[in-house]
Image: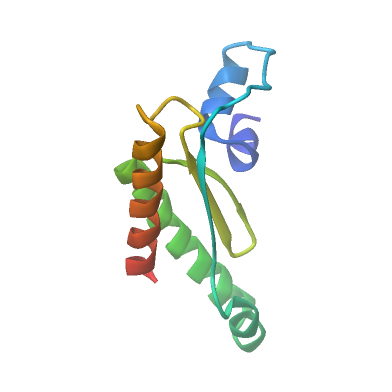
Length: 114
């Protein structure tokens, strides 16, 4: 169940649930969110085998996952070829400006990986 939750919810929320918390809805003042979509993915997926496409996404998302730790941002989820991260929702950045800086850094690092 824990792994299933980690596939659908951000890790801080899963830890919150595991600790027995029931107050899962929170209001955040300033959060920076990045949704990155792979340009040309639909065309690529129609031209290549499913195994190739899944391997490509798996490798790329594993790199992105490592970058989240490096930049101090949280992976929210992947949706097909889209990768979503945020900063500022789980008290990991001291200021809104720092949250934005981390997310921009993450985005630039993601571009370096593709």
